[in-house]
Length: 501
Image (cartoon, rainbow, N blue to C red):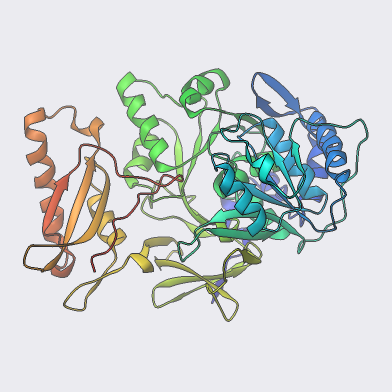
């Protein structure tokens, strides 16, 4: 059982900046500080409009009145479904600073699913944004529904909350893969917000661009709430097709991205011979899926530091971050403070201020003796840096009894600059014999100099060289080179093939 003091991160910034990272316990207290401290700074840029912290505070206060007039019971849960927008930000803060719990729903949910979620989560009202594809849920609901655009003349103060007061419910598949809601307290959310401040030099007053959905914990906490906590200005990119246009206009300093988007931006940068993320870009926070060391090294050539990290919805997103990615690009970093961790049979177990209170709509069998079992297989090196080696539920048990973690094998192949992504899986031949197979997606930017007719043989040769270095039971017996990407989840993780029976 180990804990990490926050002081371990002090060396990555100056003392004045580090001392400003204050540990608030509730979203209300954090927002009260931000509204006063940064009043005249621009908080949000959205749809051609600039909104200062003072303006956002005024609009939050008015929307609190809209919610208050619904006559909800104390501690009510309020569903929030809206595309990324300024109005989402306003509504989220209004709900949570009234002491209610915001049940954040993905904007693309069909009406029937929205209705089902309001029932499963026990919500007393629903706040909806404009521009949703299917708004027929309004006719189905048994609770009041209010548009995010509504307002009031009267302003309402924040309610008294504590660190234990429930704050937000976020969708998750958890460790079992069954969709449910992770209930995070104010204290957990604030720990997640604060963790986003550790490990890099220029923490405060950054220009950030928001491209991830706010219904995803990585988008909500690291892409929105940490920049607000630090007095940053966040441009909301409403459509990822406009991302590079928005970047050219805004010139952000920092972005939070999933690896697939980082790959795309890097590929375009090489194609057009310029940094497509702009000349002011300093940092990329990258996670939600495995980050290839190749990305760290290639962005370093562009003068951009890419920080791989690891997190879970259940941990208010951030568990670890890598402030030394240039030296240890394969690692997801060192553990953030105020959490305990231990490794049981290779699996990471967690306790801490950032962990969920409960699952809503599902059981909490992931806990044992107060420890949350992440389902992730890990190792920690002599310097305290964490490495993800796979998922327990993805482990393949071979006929000889050997256990193989696909992610551990994939990491070896992904070290090749010509490989963008890979998937190792169990296959079976016509005789019923089971074996390991490999499918890869080539990285096109690295293949441009090789004649098209020779690319297959080149890639296969490189993969075979790696394959021969692996222990016999981990070697793959079949290699397939894909001409298209893998199917992916909304968070851009590869959808794994089902195991052979």
